[in-house]
Length: 128
Image 1 (cartoon, rainbow, N blue to C red):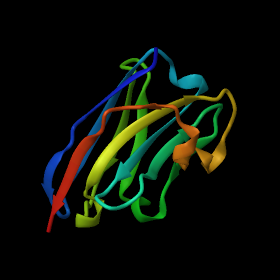
Image 2 (cartoon, rainbow, N blue to C red):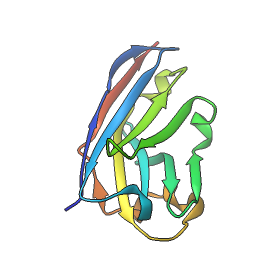
Image 3 (tube, rainbow, N blue to C red):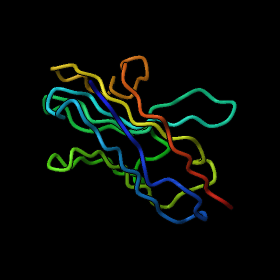
């Protein structure tokens, strides 16, 4: 059974940094698309960053390019999202997600409809 648990959220001032972690169990990263999504009040859940399986690379939504970095630690079965130069508009509940694919999805891994398995979410608040 796939299980994902986020941690590392909190309150930070604009310009600061946070690193989100997503501890996973029940699968390995090799055949799975994995990603970070966020949902701000009154807005739809959007893809922030993802990694496509089968050597497909990583992808970012335009608003976080150059500021956020996604990575994995296979030994720790953990997905990370390093968030730098945070802005108030980054405030949202952040979710990690995973979906078994076994093929290179390209940037479709940023699409929320691709995923069946989700973490519970964690709040990130950036004050101005």
